[in-house]
Every structure is written in structure tokens, then in C-alpha cells.
Length: 253
Length: 226
Image 1 (cartoon, chains in turn red, purple):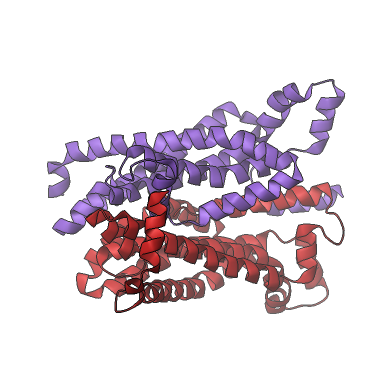
Image 2 (image 1 turned 180 degrees about the vertical axis):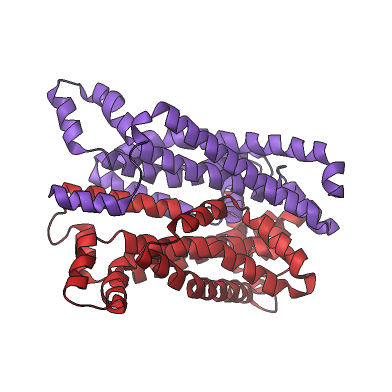
């Protein structure tokens, strides 16, 4: 346990909180690249996912991409892009890598959210005279939110984890202390940096989880948790099936 | 293709090492997840606790976990064992949930029929529930296998040799081909193992073959049945 105490000593030493290498600066760098990549990935993946989910076309392609993306080693992708795009454009290369890694989970969340909706609900919306656009924005989008946001959560996790590795190419961020600690065999620094990364990942995930809870229409939330009326067996099994579909969309870090 | 043809031996050796490092966590993760997932499915309280813990563990970035784990269990951060345990933790974090979902996907009617025919709960588990949960478990296992194989490469940052060596070495020497070889070989191994698992699944679970996961059609037939 000594290592952990050392790490906390390192973490709370005043010199870690001042100057250009301060932990607060590293958190800022980490968050900047993560949030930027997350927003770009959402802007690409959500419309595309809705298109696939609404029309039902291109689903096989999306599934294949998600499968291949899971096999993609994120660390290798970063190094590859940095060398291909140019060592002078590290931030562009790393952001591109982070976007590429987050798109599949968000895409899977968007289209599986739409697919998990009971067909009868959409048929009913069409029957009462809604246009396709109204069906999408007023029925499919709200009902698909739970799966979309959980796809966004796993995309964001992927980004934060990979941004840690991006310190290897000199981008800064919280991975810097871990990697420098490893190199210099200074485990208090490595472990201290690691603890900050863990805390950051947990906080961001908790924020998105809260969003997931708040952003979901009350009727959907009740159906998922079974608070208003217990779900029937068929619904429970359907929920289990959609969770599986979603966990299949989750990619590793 | 100069670099590759000159270094075929190295690539082969690293690939074998990579596969060895990935195989242990995949198998261990699967074995550990079966009882955990079943308990999570069976009892509501443990389900909440287990899935929350799994979710939290999954949230931790791999490089950070590689640093945090060793002092907790008294290992060197640079040992193979550290990487294997970290990967097993991630495997269980994904797999336990999918095992729980797999048991939930078994038709309760079939379960009751087995009970009615006089199966003991132990025998019902092995002869009815476990095989019927197979397809969903296999889907989870394939996800675990592929992501574990991709994740092994991170081990190079704590000095564990795998195809990840080609990333750092290629980066330092600025050889695009070397990094590309590492990325492609990792993906080839992952997709090959994925295919092997799928084929094993087809061979041992012939009943899953006709049930294509076409949810739209399932929803329609579900509607007709109601």
C-alpha cells in the first residue's frame, strides 16, 4: 500500500499544481481533445445512424464497420496517423484517431436505438398521418435516446482511454505523467497520473449516465425500469436482446 | 514491402506471443463470467451490484489500470501477469453482463417445461438453460475476444512484448510499414479468432443457425402472436 500513499503524496504536492506541467493543465488538455473529438464523432455518427435506423438500409455495412473497429488497436492507429499525417500536425492526427475510434459505438447506439422501437409504434405514428420527418423527430429520436446515449457513453470512454495513450506522441494530457513515471521508474508519478485518469473517466461517465437518466422521456424510463407497471416477460426479453445488441456495439479500449 | 519481407520471423514470433497473451484472459474471463453472470441473472440484488462494478471497471482506461493494479496485488507493473490480469478484468466486465443477458433470453416456457418434466435445477441448468443461453453468450465472447486481442498491444507501454512492439519501434524509427504491419496483423488475428469462435458456435449450437437476429421480423411475428 506504500506505493499508493506515495502516489497521493506526489498528487497533492504543491509543485504538481503549478506551472505548465500542472495536473490541472493536463486535465484541461485531456478534456480539450476528448470533448473536441467527441463532438466531431457525434456530428458524424448520429445523423448517419439515424439514417440507417430510419430507412433500415446499410445496416450490414454499419455492423461490419463496428466489428472491424473493435479489432482496431487504438494505440497503433494513433501512431500510424501521426506518421502519415505528419509529426508536425500531432493534434490533427490524434483528434482524427479519436474520432475514428468513437464513431462506431455512437453509430451503433443511434441505429440500434431506432431499431429497438416496437414496429407497431412507428406504424401507428404513420397511420395518424405523421410525415417521415415527424416520425423521426417526434417518435424515433425520443424513444431511441436510451441506446443512443449509452452508445455515446462508450464512445466517450473509448476517447478518454485512448487520449491517455496519445501522450506517447507528445500531446500532453494525463497519460504524460504515467508514461514519464514508467520511463523514469518513478511509480508515485505514474500511479498518481493513473489515479487522476481513473477519476476523470469515472466523473465523465457519471455525467453522461445522469444525462442518460434525465434525457430519457418518462414513459420510456418507466418501461425500462418497470417502475410504473412491471414489464411483461416478452418485454423483459426484448430489453435483454436490445442490451445485447448494444453491448455488441461497444468497443474495447 | 521491404521491411516486412526482412522481418517475417519477428512478425511471426510477436504474433504467437500476442495470441498467447490474449488467449489466457479470453478463456479465464469466460469461465469466471459464467457463475457471476448466472448469479446476476438469478438474483436482483446481485444483478445491480455486479453490473455496476463491471461498468465501473470497464470505465477505467487500460493504461491507468495497468498502473493501479500492481501495487494492489503486489505484482511488478512490467510483468506479463499484470497485463493478463488487467485483460481478464476487462473480459469479465464485458462478459458477465452478456452472460446475465443470455440467461434472461431463455424462454421461460422452456424452463418451466423442463421443471415440469422433472429436471433437477442442476440438470436443468446444464441441459436446458446453458445451451439455450449459448448464442447470446457466444456473441459476448466474440466481442471479448476481439477487444482483448486489440488491447494486448497496450502492454508494450509497460514492456510486455506483443505486436504492440511494432507500433513503438516503428514510430521511433519512422517506418510506416512496420506500424501498419502491427495494426493489420492485430486485426487479422482478431478477425480470425472471431471467425473460429463463430464456426465453433455453428458446430456446437446447430439450433441457433435458423434464428437470424432479424429484429424487425421478430417484432412483427411477436405482434402476430399477441
